[in-house]
Image 1 (cartoon, rainbow, N blue to C red):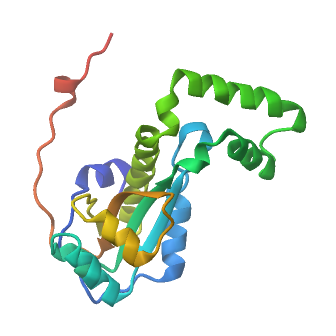
Image 2 (image 1 turned 45 degrees about the vertical axis):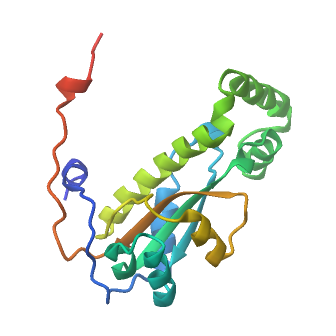
Length: 202
């Protein structure tokens, strides 16, 4: 299947084969591909908790207004963000760790980031976090399709209780719940507006 056809055929799937098992190795491979998503200053603020345990999936379903796709899924990807990744010192250290900058470039890079944040202070807060996590999440959904899986992005859940039962750090902000698995239905038909309706070319 070519890439454009795969994009056009994506649908939110709400019924999965509950017996299908995704291996841990495949999950890691999928996430490594998804992590090529862009992010502000390459902050990569995403955190992902993958829940496969059936008892936990049942508990998550109860905290998701009993939506069946949560309990039926092979895995639920809880996608969170950590604003600490936007800290300038963290960004510089990350660039140094991966040899992306020379020592002589550190001050200039730090100043560029400061200037950027002075123009867009919201990009190191919740607004920027949701933007970056949105890019990562969409990338993840496309990668899942390439591996033969379907998914459905969800926010109609009790994130506060989910964070509590999973004992996750308070600094991790929950953004999205993504049930994943092998589809047993074709999903709902959807209508998208044509580009002519939302595009201005100057």
